[in-house]
Image (cartoon, rainbow, N blue to C red):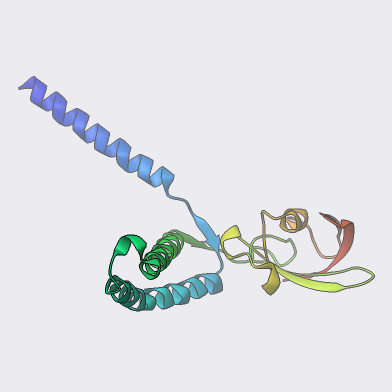
Length: 175
């Protein structure tokens, strides 16, 4: 009788440890509310394409021998890429931590920053790596620019190292 109780105790402990490990392994993705909405919209679009890709596979299958069927291989590859992206977005959305600008005076995640130097004026939003898109002015807090700006305030001067050399900016506003 004692052995059965010990076995049950060990099984429960193992299950608890597995649950803890799974919670530890869950990664939190820091994104803005707008970034989450964009990902959810992309996810809907990708899921809508599943039927289209399945039709391509079915059509290509009708062409004959699958071992030498380039259309079939291309459709299966497209399906794999589609499913991979869907899984990636679902992981991010399910483990998203919505960020908001914490302070209007200090640069952090979610801050909108306006910089200027003698030649140009630029505006960035500091975001997590998942939604970074420099073309849209969204830079990651883990990028060289993001790291240089993090924690700075209005009026501070910051020097950013780029492949073309160091560039100094004055922080015009933080919002």
